[in-house]
Image (cartoon, rainbow, N blue to C red; front, side, top):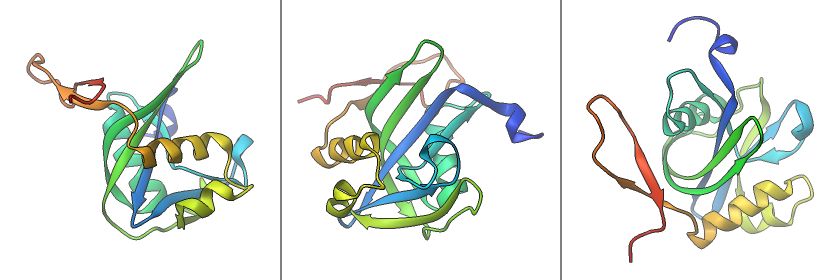
Length: 159
């Protein structure tokens, strides 16, 4: 899409991803708003026409330099006017680097250290715990009309 990203953002829909790799979690130190100065799992708002999975891939790459694929849906928070979806995401490639805009640093941190730090907020800790437990809903493909991509039903894993 072309144009100013600020005009394409859908401020009512956002995503985040918990990327785990070799006992570490990907965290970014936020530079604005209520999360300023805190280490959080990266994410952001959907752009018009994006699926949550596409938005998460884009946000992770833009903000952290990491390529990752969304997997299980760990949690969804619904508000009166918005929603926020958290995915477990599988690391594919890339080096953790700050975008020097929305975050001041990006790090791979030992998960146990992250769970014990005061500069990691409670929501991020809960999402890390869910990802470590393997909790969440798995995507189940189903027949969709032609042209619809990445349309999955998230439901408990089949046993």
